[in-house]
Image 1 (cartoon, one colour):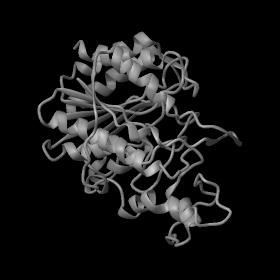
Image 2 (cartoon, helix red, strand yellow):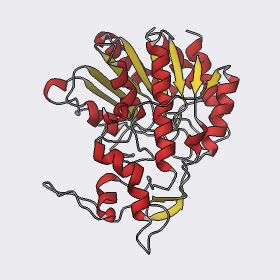
Image 3 (cartoon, rainbow, N blue to C red):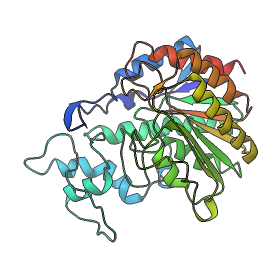
Image 4 (spheres, rainbow, N blue to C red):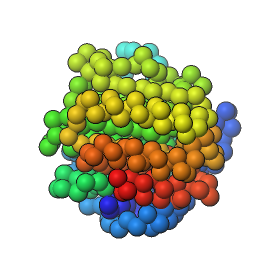
Length: 340
């Protein structure tokens, strides 16, 4: 298995983040990459650089005005004399209908969902390269590799068609799933990040060709709070093709593995041609976001279970924050997956 990563992904490095009313240091930092790459090395993966792709691959999932905002919005923001170097919204549209504004503060509110997704001068290059890493991994799988790992940083599963949120700007897992559809009539996304992949759910909610399955901390008590409930099953033609499996916050290995068994059975019943695995390591017992209690060995066991599907698989990195165990958790998962 190869790991795909581009150095430009580390240029994005905002420092501000609001939680419980406090502005503090953001946990989604370039240091995550250092620790994850250590895990890649320990698992014995070869590291390769991503190649560039036409932006139409991103536009297959995201609106053009959102892509334009990500690329050019910060430069427009910095033309405002009192603007802080990190673009962050202070007003958002809540009711519909709502008009799309010209003012950059209004557009920031339209396109940025929360206070964890500031945009800097370097954000566009980083998030584009992160998506290119995911697409390069997808190309490897389309061309016959059984699996590939994309070290996506920034992550992606909270990103909507035209909204950033939860440290996410471009939805890498969704971009990969859409790309895999050029060969496969059905694609499944399995998300095991401790947070629900609300952006991924929204993108495919009315579609029967992409099954979305997520195991995550119960949103009644955990971010993203409004999405990820069991009754959210899809709409229209997509009804029944979205499966949420919330577990109690701070659940241990046995609970996660039981939910994973249910998830894998649903994927097997769907019979996809390929799998996208949105890999969060933030369900670990030591993760600072405190949503799970999974052990390092638990990640090994879950990896073996997922590998048992024997599907062509693209793994996209989602969460997992700064602990001494982060690299070891990734190594445990990748090694377990390769032991199928």
